[in-house]
Image 1 (cartoon, rainbow, N blue to C red):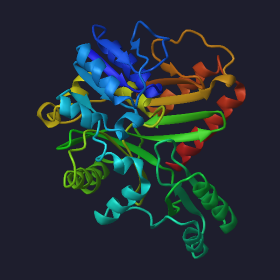
Image 2 (image 1 turned 90 degrees about the horizontal axis):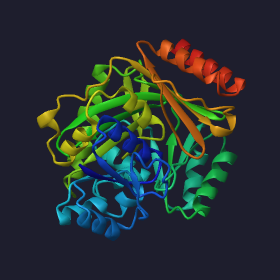
Image 3 (image 1 turned 90 degrees about the vertical axis):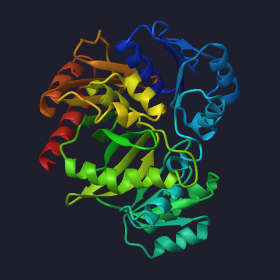
Image 4 (image 1 turned 60 degrees about the horizontal axis):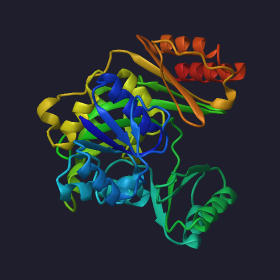
Length: 388
């Protein structure tokens, strides 16, 4: 099959690598200038938001399936344009995806649908936002509204810091700001896939961001089947049903950033793609033909062919390390799954237990990374295990 991936980031390159690994007969093209892996894909010098040029390439090169990971392409209506041409694409329509680009829209939808989320306020004027935080108990979370470039969600512990953050966000030409109560629990990221009619869970994971590294364990030991059912019934299905009331069905990934409290949850943010490094953790455990899953989803027949998305009955542990903390990079052994970009070296392993996955990976990293990184990772992991 001829496949086009619209995107130029780490997730796009990783997706191409994984699809090619599962079936090397596919011809894969990516809208990137990174030509470092010509055995896996052909790099195209086409901008992600140049929808007209992408349409022409698909039309005149016999592309059978397109996967759009680029936020620029999605918000500029690539799925809408493909629908007019009757091309098959895995991507949400621009209007449907607004809930993932605007925190204010996500919060309003959650409020309307009675989805549990921290108490919040939305403001389009600096003075109103500042007056609001004067009356709050700290800490609080201050977020930018439009998240195309970057999500900002700073925890402010006092009024002076909150005031400075509000001023900074408005000075950066943000038209709105979201302020919400802080919940002192570690976030969990839960991902689903939907064809706009049905949805299936993909994976849940936790992240720890330390100095010079990020670690991810998946799946967590915290998300029960009961919580997954609640997330589907009380969050995912109400959202996709609400979207169909004013635009086309949402086709793609729906990711949730949640916090658990006493076997219940609060939803903080909604994503249309995997966050960096989360995709690698998921792919390391996936036991399905990924391309078939995405293709069936794009064609609206997810539930016809899948009751659930099969994962290995194991745990994965992922570490993304700043490249300037890598002393040497040996050829990665087969039990490890690796990728890299300009800043990070990302490596994943899996095992029957999370402790074993962590220990195996740390043992390997000891041979290539600075000693202080290993100490920080190990201490963070022990603290997490004690919390469980």
